[in-house]
Picture 1 (tube, rainbow, N blue to C red):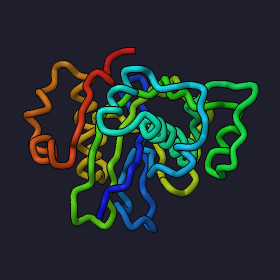
Picture 2 (cartoon, one colour):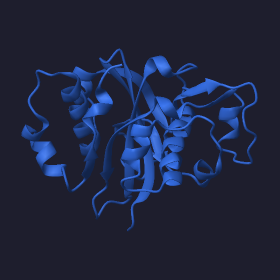
Picture 3 (cartoon, rainbow, N blue to C red):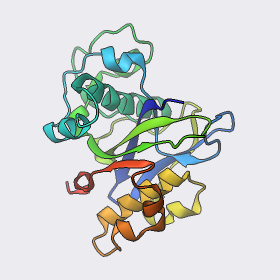
Length: 221
């Protein structure tokens, strides 16, 4: 089974908490697991125009594996999925947002915003290993809570949406790749932690499921 492109958004609050939600019981892939908001890339993500572009650094990192249009589609998917699943808007006010035929994008533009792709940082890429019921080629982006608009609300895709302290995430039922990414985020934010290469989970998944990692995404601001 060929992996499908997907995008995920890691949202940090005060560099001490992360937003997680629980996948509902109807999901075939990882039901009941806590994950970041995100999902697969939709056709509209590649067609909808966005006046705010990715930063040069993020664009360059993504284009090591995809074309420029696909890089933008991945980023757009992360913004759209986050809006749909959490109600949060990673966007900039626009007096005349684009009109679109995409039923997935019109609700976002109706808020009076366009996606703020320049606020996204590219942190990691992971590919679901063979043998799973679903396979995704997922890019993990990162942003900060201060860049968001709106209030937290769910659409049913994720339940129990909440801010979780980074030092408490291991108490939740997480997928292995989510657990690994969260561990790497903690390590990247704390200079006193052990190097990531010393993690057993990192050694197990790096190069097999974890394909790319960009520590610089965690640098301030």
